[in-house]
Image (cartoon, rainbow, N blue to C red; front, side):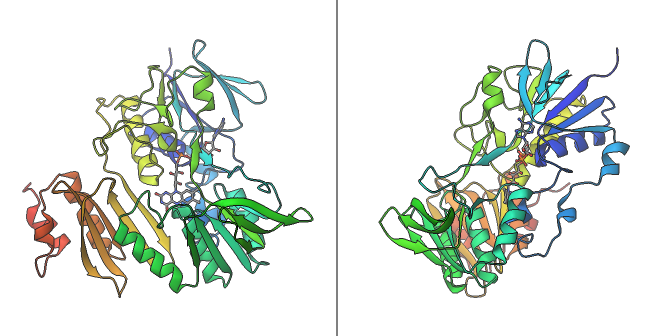
Length: 413
Ligand code: FAD
């Protein structure tokens, strides 16, 4: 009998990384990477940033060129998976082909949540998830003057910063009271609110999209839930994503805000693992199982599953979550999860846009948000990962430096 076949469902960040890491781990069996997007697998982060500014071309978004897949014997299949047959150990494709697996890795990601309002299907309304979305949007950006962005989350605000830099009038509607509230502390939200206003972005809090208005099939503006009318040539929404769980549900796997996996990233079917934006997993960094949408999460989970499938001892997945976003001249890097913080301490110079916010909960450091302070971010990742004690009072002492503190508390080899 030959080596087992590993089928990877979804050829995005997590799917590609699983294939690459399997080979790095010395796995010699068959690898089939199935994705429904056209072309070679690519990274998404630049789609709402440098790509829309024309600073990065599509080719540079690819993880690898075609030869890499051949050389590494990663069989790419461009097709939509329509069913998982757990008894037969196979997946069915849209063209009715079936492909057998010994182990199946679900890396199906998520799709944009679409606002359920009148006018949402008008021409000129966009979400940004895929290269195709970004290409279509990019063409429009060249010819418009006003855009309304729905949602002041990471992607909405990254896009807002790009549009403002291109001289477009930007209005942002946000149902909450501050930007990126789901992921950021209040002081960091406030800094981004001020920065966007400085770039000329108009932020409207406490109101959502009521409807998209149009003429001749094309969007001409929006009505907010407060009845305000805002004219626009383009409407871009970024109100979160929905994990692509349908195949898992149909296959009878447990789903609850994502496919449920254990600490080894296995579903209840020992022949099926799941990773990336798709999964709800237990994390030592969160009180409840959590679903994260980040490159770090997709890459580290892919590596963990690949190591296990390549025969390494199975160990629980415990990687520290970290994230980043680029908006205008602000590069924000976040280590840890700030949810439930009770105290924050600011380090650095907010006026110079080089500062960090350290977030504490019950006296324990839980997250560090660094704006244009990469050294703080790197130090924070190490400090958090090794659970180093650091009190808020220490940080407020004159001359405190996070990088120096990390070096001073580093365990001796
Ligand atoms: P995906 O990359 O979405 O891949 C899933 C793939 O599966 C997709 O290609 C999908 O089409 C395919 N698929 C789904 N269903 C099927 C099916 N039935 N059959 C076949 N294929 C299927 N993260 C950061 O950390 N920093 C950032 O700055 C950042 N910026 C971002 C900007 C944008 C515009 C977007 C959209 C995301 C950004 N992210 C960022 C998030 C990051 O890109 C995702 O967390 C990451 O791509 C998740 O990887 P994944 O493999 O789980 O999902």
